[in-house]
Image (cartoon, rainbow, N blue to C red; front, top):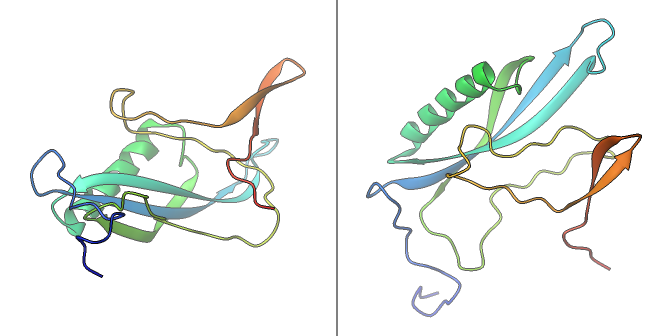
Length: 153
């Protein structure tokens, strides 16, 4: 189909820095914590995504590696992780006006809960995270209930 006819396709992105492209990478990890009395004892697994601008995929992967090392060193995540696996790396040259799905994962079994966090390694001026949650008081401890974003009938 001719790009000029499709209204849902934009021209290639023009980002600061000239010809740089946007890369989104999805990673997974396994974590085994064994410390007597810890609420976190046992095996865990997790997923996270990183984003970077780069001239090519090799530069992007180097940036991701440096960022993961920095997050492991400076943040309170990835502390007990021994290895991180690259699940996919997406090079984005343009974005359809309607957006697009970058990554999808379906996991067997019921969601048993976990830890969710957004925006590590960027300042408030560089990125903002938006949540759809409702606060809930449970014995004086603030917890959050995740609200559905879309429901299907």
